[in-house]
Length: 178
Image (cartoon, one colour):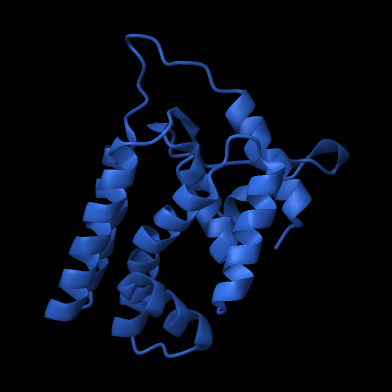
């Protein structure tokens, strides 16, 4: 994972480059992205012939929480798929975001994959969120943690259904259930 200073600079750059979309903007609102990622998870589970009522219930609650966050937060440019595989090292060691799934919504959404990457301990997660929020003006630790809770289910449920039982999957499943 890149250092928190580099990630913070990338998140600040994304936030600073945002201007309100015009009347004919193609940018959608975050509820569209939330539905997309949860529908994708549902399709993947169905393709794997997973019909687990507990998993469906957890995903349903997580989708509702994510839609609530999407509907009541700050508004700015959101990359929408900002995880380590979609970030390259650019000129002067600056990080460059690629492969966007842009929306117009809560920019704190983009921090979730960065704070969750490789974490299996609540204290480490809390510390990562606080450190990143201290470096990114306008970032809300409370909202990042809310997004983290809602999106953890989307990651944990397919892993659990596939039989994964590593520490990170257990941690994500616990987050999803909280």
